[in-house]
Length: 198
Image 1 (cartoon, rainbow, N blue to C red):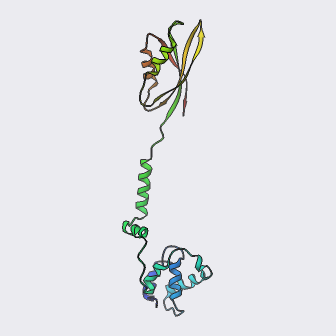
Image 2 (image 1 turned 120 degrees about the vertical axis):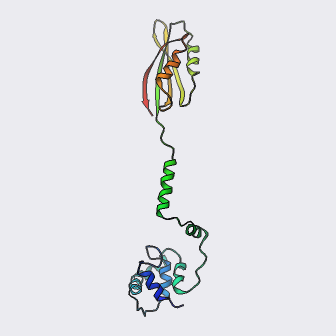
Image 3 (image 1 turned 45 degrees about the vertical axis):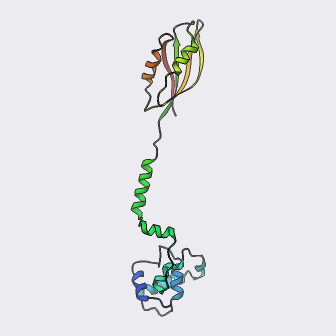
């Protein structure tokens, strides 16, 4: 089939290749359909350039369908994915906008801390099991109670040392200590012995 040289010349006056930004099978198809008689400068430049890839023709990517526009052959129906992309007309700006929107919806890292809280009882007769049960009964969003142990203070008195994980934005340690202090039958005081960001 003869190549529509005027159409090809017009196309190549704005582009380097028949399709895309690198040589492809579309260039190969048009190249093979051309004769040597080239009276068009852009076509001649393109022909000479594509000829330099002749040894690699079989390895070039893409399909020859884009070249059918210039050789007069009926171009095959685009694959569903290609058709959809054409219909969507999604350009670079839309892809960037979609990426930014996805990034904005990504959950943000939640700041958490591991805290060691020490709770002192009134005396050696304080029911430490009931004290711990009372402390653990405090439930709120962003608060997770961990392991605990009793640590000897002296004179037979033991304090409760309990680990907890808090979400910094949701849990105030001052408010938590106030809630612990409300169990006044068992609790004398509480202190934050250690705090570490997760």
